[in-house]
Amino acid sequence: MANHKSALKRNKQNAVRQARNTHIRSTMRTYVKQVREAVAGGDAEVAKTTLLRAISYIDKAATKGVIHKATASRKISRLNKLLNTLDA
Image 1 (spheres, rainbow, N blue to C red):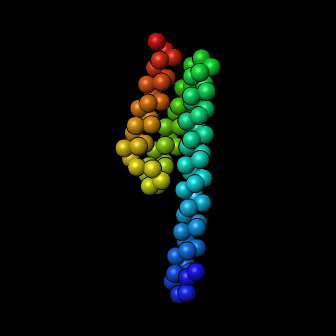
Image 2: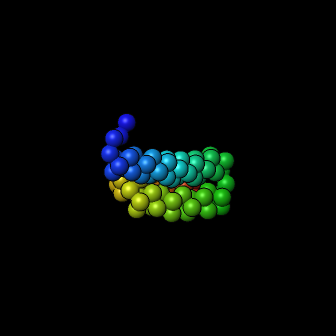
Image 3: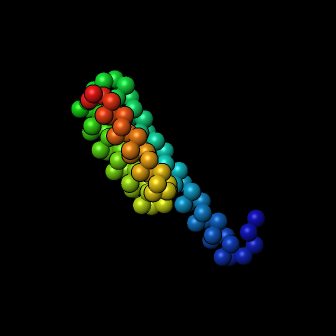
């Protein structure tokens, strides 16, 4: 356990940041899952709208440092590729 006032504050800050990052990552994964389900269901319109929402949230997660920008780019690329298979 922390003994100094600054260490106690650091522990509190880390707990808050961990909770925020977990929420952002979990929500992002939910949006990605919704895109995959829409594509699997064959519904192009729903897939496109959920893809736009997922892309914006993935970008937000990368901007906030929850995920790396290359990871965000890779996820977006793979989701776009998946949606294009529906159109073809």
